[in-house]
Image (cartoon, rainbow, N blue to C red; front, side, top):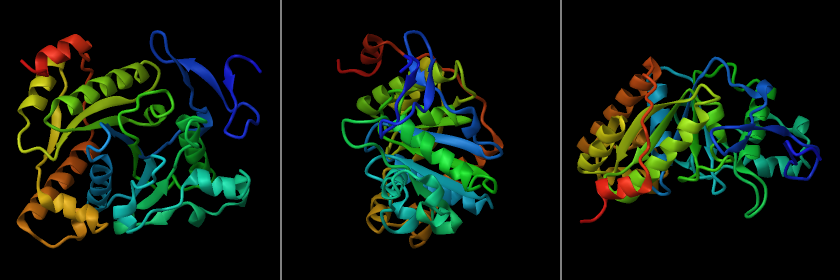
Length: 305
């Protein structure tokens, strides 16, 4: 096998050439035929457990309040990105493909797409078996399948909700499709440290792809002083703040977006912030190019005395 190709999950023919994405990096290059055209595409990243799926799902719901047609793609093997939009866990694309021995032509859209709250089209890409395969392959196959079934032709917004703060080539693959990357953080060291690494990953991808950073969302945080201090230092910006209110936790437990919860004061306030953020993103944010800090410097900026 030529050294510039990799096998697919089943060990069949190579599926994509490799391409350099920054110094010392070799990543899986997106198939040109798999480009997402027409829709505005956003990738949501952040530290594991920081609330990316909650943010993504409420943002999807907020876009529908603006009259937009939305597709949300969960990129996590535990496939729980869209369960607050649909009320239950959805089957993954990769498991659905395995059920038909990877004969994609046998699938129908309803086999892997579920319509959730507000008409959001919900897809869970899933992931390869633990310790095998590549998340980038899974993302690529999902986009390819959506294009084959013309699911992207009547879509205004696509949101990729991406696993944790893994910034390897596989889970950085959604950045090859995105217009803007959004980072979810909290007002603490570990979340900001993860954000710093994600910024570096996006900057690497931006050398060869159109993706740029939109900004960060401070989530479940009473204050934003540490986030803002980091942003001021590296040239980044916070574009939303979701306060640490119990309503967000309760909505997740009830498998609902905030837009389906009772009209409590905290819920109404959070909904308004999500709708504002959706409008900001759809109107178009200036791509920012922060300079991530070396480890020693971020420890000195935010670390313990």
